[in-house]
Image (cartoon, rainbow, N blue to C red; front, side):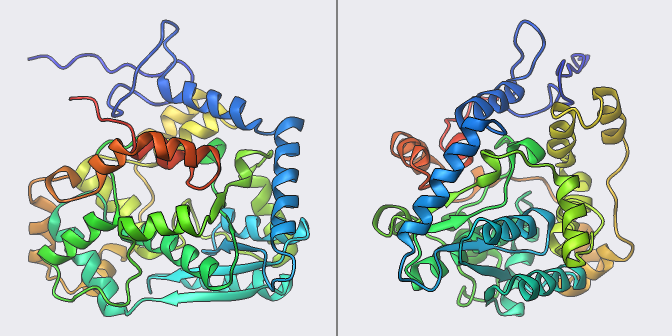
Amino acid sequence: MTEAPRRICAVCIYDSRMPGIRFDESGVCSFCQMIADLKRDYGTGTPAGEEKLRAIVDEIKRAGQGKKYDVIVGVSGGTDSSFMLMKAVEWGLRPLAVHYDNTWNTAVATENIRKMLSKLKVDLYTHVVDNREADDIIRSFFKASVPDLDGPTDLALAETLYRAASAHGVGYVLEGHSFITEGISPLGAIYFDGKYIASIQKRFGTMPIRTYPNMPLHTFLKWILFKRIRKIRPFWYMQYDKEAAKEILKREFGWSDYGGHHLENRITAFYHSYYLPRKFGIDLRSNTIAARVRAGKISREEGIREYAEPPYLEEGLVEYFQKRVGLTEKEFQAAMDAPKKTYREYPSYKRTFERMAPLFLLLAKRNLVPMSFYLKYCARERPT
């Protein structure tokens, strides 16, 4: 049977292989339309958007009166979180920087965090997971043959931010995410939640979860419904240029570039540069390249050519991963060659999130959960 010709969006580089993609009569994909809708709803980069952001900052200041900190900012040493921390201080907020250390940080990322905190005079709270436990969870996901190898890191960071906010009586968390520069990736086969992580570790792990900050559903609901901790993404409202941000950080803080998006952490780098492309045929550079095309940073043709090139792979990274998680070459290759699976084959909260979609939409509109969570995790999946 002949494969149907691949259709590419008339605006960005997304094509018909993208899960859930649809095209309008002009050939523009549904993800470009989603970005356009978000820009309109948030007033991104417009006076209206800036005014909304100023009102939120004023609200944070009022809520933080009499407290040592009025906002939590997650830091990784990367561009977005570093610039977010700088802006928080510039706006007159009193942030507590929070970092989840999965023990896979690069030296560059660690030094970037130190430089930012030192010059801005910002305190740091770090949750350090037991490295053996962190490696065991990563190995479990690798053995489970699912594409969500970095999911435990993302969820643990979210939980760490909530814990720090609750411990210090802070009601706001600032996240350095921009749908303009990063896009919003479709759900597709990539997914994570607390039940899913616990089920993978129970089935494939050799250690119980003790120091890893997992987030079961009841804990998630506690943070958002009872603690009322709001997550704000200022870059959704303001004009944000990632390349300009890098130059400011280099000039003002001696910040160092780490070579590419998501490469400040070595497990994340392995995930993006090797694991997803080699095992699943998924190259998440599509999100950032498509975003640059939409923003006019590069032409659509340049984006298509860039995406056709293989992702950068740090020399020795694959061998480092094998050694860290305790796999022989034979075991590593057997896992890479094993049949591909997804979260759908393991217990998760996905159906629960779908049933709770009306509640999560209301919470997203009130900044109690990110709108991207609602768009990705609460939508009912279309049959493939």
